[in-house]
Length: 147
Image 1 (cartoon, rainbow, N blue to C red):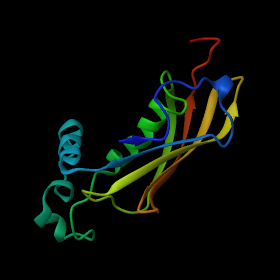
Image 2 (cartoon, rainbow, N blue to C red):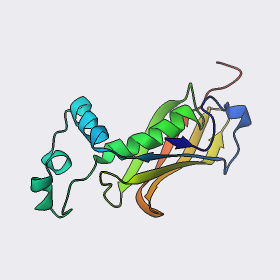
Image 3 (cartoon, helix red, strand yellow):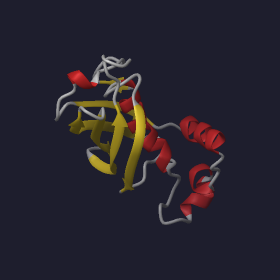
């Protein structure tokens, strides 16, 4: 994985609207197989090339939630980072991610409610500059006052 910032914590007192972080990850066959094992989602569109060739995707695709998990990694490791608690997430899957694709997962601060420690984040994943996922997350950000 290639991150644009070191892992750690950015407390709510230091967050600014427009602040961004990202990571890049190539999705491998092993990633898909491990996700299937952990999630118990063994849909053959993810695991069986012959089956997947007969679908609308014309080949295997990664689990959508595996891709969404990259957003979680940016939020939990970089922005806001360690100590962040997910409160909600919307997702729209726009295009499939295939084995071998390199996904760019990006998160951007959209709004900050300091009194409630709530941060709204725009989230997106791209492959070759084209969107494959977009959404919005609401998180409880760590604070120097409480953590």
